[in-house]
Image 1 (cartoon, rainbow, N blue to C red):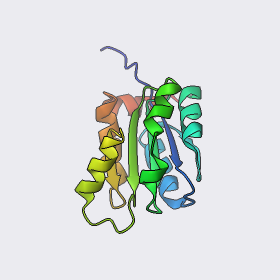
Image 2: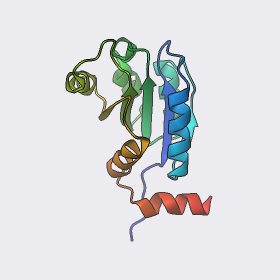
Image 3: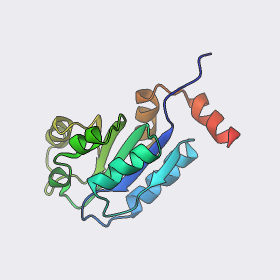
Image 4: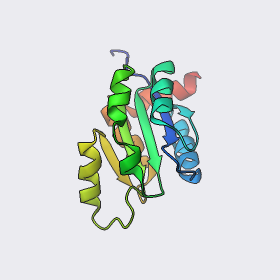
Amino acid sequence: MVPNTMSQTVVLGVIGSDAHVVGITILEQAFSAAGFDVVNLGVQTSQEEFAEAAVAHDAGAVLVSSLYGHAEQDCQGFHQVLEEAGVDAATYIGGNLAVGQDDFEETRATFEALGFDRVFDSETDPEEAIAALRDDLGLTTTDTERATISS
């Protein structure tokens, strides 16, 4: 069996001026329980803080949360900031991403156009995001379970 070389570290935070902490607390617990090393940046996190943490921790993924409806403006240029910092990680965003969001497929398309690999609404079960991340990083359940057992 070839050892997995992708980082199982995820950087998680609430972007912009958003101060909603409950969602990322739930995600931190869920991703940790699934065997990922989680770096929780907390609330009101700048794009640069995400990039710096991703570099410092060699993150395999950057998970952005936003619940106050202004994620589109907060994420303008986000992937450029990551690229300039040399970050090569999967990028996910989830939450209540748009004020008065009626058609989530439209919202998903907006954030995919901004460069996000995966876009989730506020009703997404954390297990769905965990399964997607395992898939995107080429991990099997046993890879993350092994990491949990060995730590």
